[in-house]
Amino acid sequence: MSAELTFHNVPPAPTAKAADLFAVLYREYALLARNRVNLVLSLSPMLVYLLLVNTSLSNLVGVIDYKGVPLRFAIFLLPMVLAMSVVSAAGTSGMALFQEELSGVATQLWSYPMRRSRFLLGKLLAGVSLVLGQSLVALGVAVLIFDFPFRAEGWAGLLAALTLASIAINGLYLAAAITIRDFQTFMVGTNVSLLVLVFSAPSLYTVDSMPTVLQWVSVVNPLTYAINGMRDAAVFGFAAAWQNLLVLAVIAAVSYAVAGRALLARAGNI
Image 1: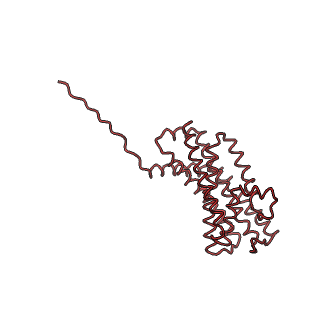
Image 2: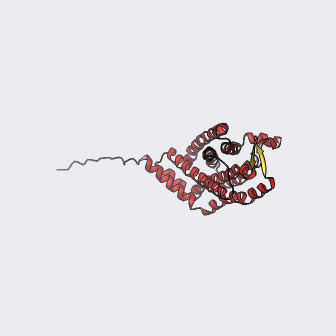
Image 3: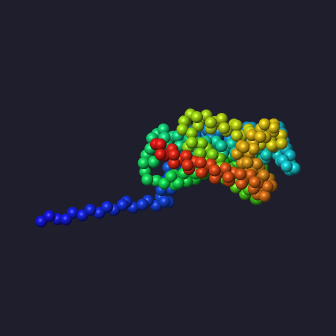
């Protein structure tokens, strides 16, 4: 008499979304924080400009008229230093994608049943927190060196504009890192774009004092809206900065939409 054999196919228990996202975040923080060379390289330009260029030019120029308000040049230059920190850190965040592919980790990641949205959200949160964290370090060093006459609304506006700028610029570099396939091309583009973006925006000067060609370039330069947004929010408050902040929000939305679609295509080719 033979026994009847029965088989039961029980699907694996689904992993909670929060657990997947937490794992991605933990991995991203470890990947970004343990590469001390990239962290030092992203902090160095900001500290050099803050400690050397900012102090020297402040003593040379003294006071500048900004939209009818006399500002010490050190205060006028603060958004430029913060924007430089944002761009440097965003480039570091984008390099993590290439490190994953060069080490073969990307293949392992896409072999795991993980939603692309969670991976992209983890990249977004980790990258933005890195960018914002390094920018806050720059702001803390600046507060120790200079005396800023901002009111509570001005500080709140500056932090809000800095956060939105970090989200938008990080989105641009993330989209570029996912779209560009060659690591050396991205490296060259990152290093060159830092100088191009900073000095084709109203960083050391107002828009009116820029050459006509640079004024045209500044219109399509995302750092123009980041710098003007931080500067106007700190000096005049949110009411004067909302247009620049709106542009940054649009840039962020478009950048992450492009990054999401490019991520799907890139993951399918691995």
